[in-house]
Amino acid sequence: MLSDWAIKQLEKITYDYLHLNCQEGTCYGILAIIGWIIFVVASFFIPNQFFMFWGNYIALIGATLFILIGLVLLVDFAHTWSETCIEKWEESDDNKWKYLLIGSTLAMLLTSIILTGIMYNFFAGSGCGLNQFFITFNLILCIIVIFLCITPVVQEANPRSGLSQASMVTIYCTYIILSAIANEPDDNMCNPLTRSRGTRTTTIVLGTILTFLAIAYSTSRAATQTSALDDDDDGHDDEKNGVAYNYGAFHFIFAVASMYVAMLLTNWNNINTTGSEELVIIGQSIVAVWVKVVSSWICLLLYTWTLIGPVLMPERFEVI
Image 1: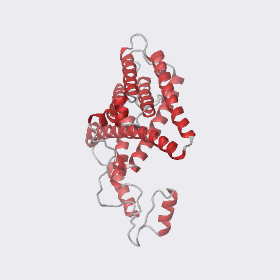
Image 2: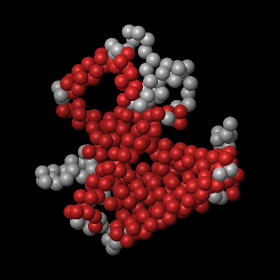
Image 3: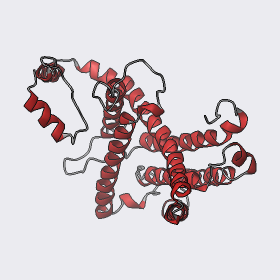
Image 4: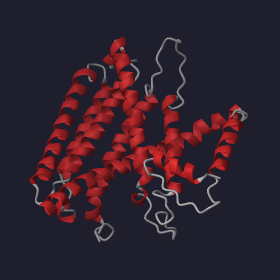
């Protein structure tokens, strides 16, 4: 049972993110800690066959779910960012919100063009047909969504849709394609980054940092903003009971995120034997390349649906 002092210290450590209103004799945190230790120790006695099955099927499915959740959150954030800037501008009549929205949109579109040029220059040489396809197909899809978001029929169904959301989705998908081809195996001499050890080491370190920062952001956002994924009212008021998040959704998001990390560290179950002096390369396999590329396509597809959905089914997308 946690004492009042222990509860206050826990709240202080989390900057009051966890606010516990436990009645006397109802906080049994020590039991949870003991249970966790038991499970950790028990995991060492689980047969290897279980972990093989878990990694090949369960963790693979969970990692895929985490990617899909992250893509949904990205599209949602793109719309939220634009709508927030517009609302702030309309409410305060402060032009800084207008300049922020326009400036960020132009910056993201310009960056997307620069990244595309870099990919064509360094990764799309002669004999690199697959890379050329990835880059060109992504460019075509991005151009389609940019023009689609400003068409009159889409603007009529959703007046707040515009270049801001499209630019955010475009730069993200362009970055994903760049990340995919920059970390692919250099079997066809199409990845110059793997030929220089210094560049390779820098790429691995930066790629690892960016990967885990993205995981941390996606996990925290998804776990604490479950209303975007679950609008059902189960009759249980978590906020009234001193909880700032939904327990089930919070732990589910972290569970699938841990599966995603496991897939990254094992190169999506693509095991290669290397020398002990080699760095562990996260995400450098043909499987990881296709996972990233398909993820970018799904992201563009989801955003496209948010544009054409209100046109095709206006009654389902009516803003209340």
